[in-house]
Amino acid sequence: VLPLPWWVVSIAAIGPPVAALLWIWLSVISTEYRLFQDSLEVESGIIARRIENIQLFRVRDLGMNQSLLARVLDVGDISVISTDQTAPRFVLRGVAQPRALYDNVRDLVAKSQAARRTMIVESDMTLPGS
Image 1 (cartoon, rainbow, N blue to C red):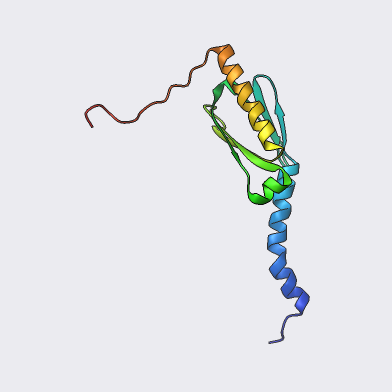
Image 2 (cartoon, rainbow, N blue to C red):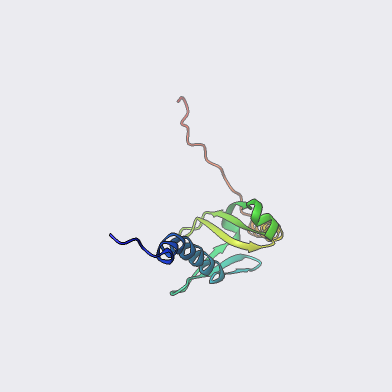
């Protein structure tokens, strides 16, 4: 059995992680977020395109996540949980200046819910007497 050349071993070791990072990067740059007064539109796809529209009055919860490196780079992820039928949970990934967008979405959600007089009702799944 002949030993493999060093460059073959290097490509085999480095190739998959580099390919994964390249795919993640392509996914982030091929996604566009548009925030309107009453909705959030997400257009995504590397090969085929998909558009998802989330009405802001349907949003139940927002969250923001940043790793240490993401904080240094001022990017992060914003999670949106809604009562939308097709996309009840959606994550806006790799958003620049995520805190500003998070605050903006939160304010627009409150305005949209107030304009529609929407009230979120939490349900307790326990039955009386149990």
